[in-house]
Amino acid sequence: MSNGVQHFRIRSIPLGPALVTGAWAGFVPGLFIGGVLGAAITFGAGAILDWMRQLSFTTGIDQALLPFGDRVGMLQTLQDDWFLVIPAAAVAFGLLSALIGLLTAAVVSASYGSLLTAQADARRDRRRGSRRRSDSAA
Image 1 (cartoon, rainbow, N blue to C red):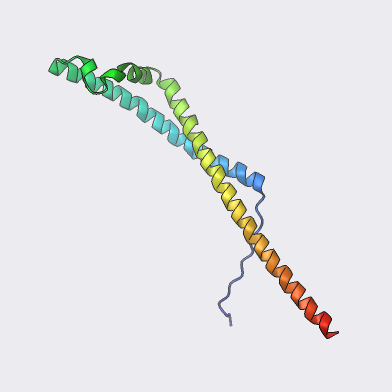
Image 2: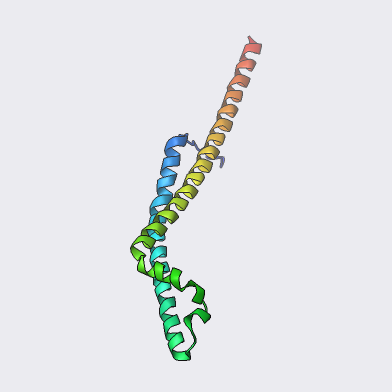
């Protein structure tokens, strides 16, 4: 019959490989998400430019007076240089995600290490306590 106490053994996690694994685990999905984000940015820039052209034509108002009118050059650059914007956004978001993954792996590795140290100290104290009792009886 069990008394309901469960014992778990946590293995140590070396810090270096944990950091590399965390960085890769963050970078790969971040690269994909950043690519999608870069494509959305270039598509959005094109959609805004098209909307501004149509609004300018139908209302007869100069494009500079419309919303985003002072950003036409930047929006045009984002749309025209899509082959640079998408990889740049992917790499930037991937590196940010890699940093988050690296920090998460460091916290997990450190917390497992502190758990292991506390367990090892408790075992060592129990062994020392049992030795002292056996030494005093002799």
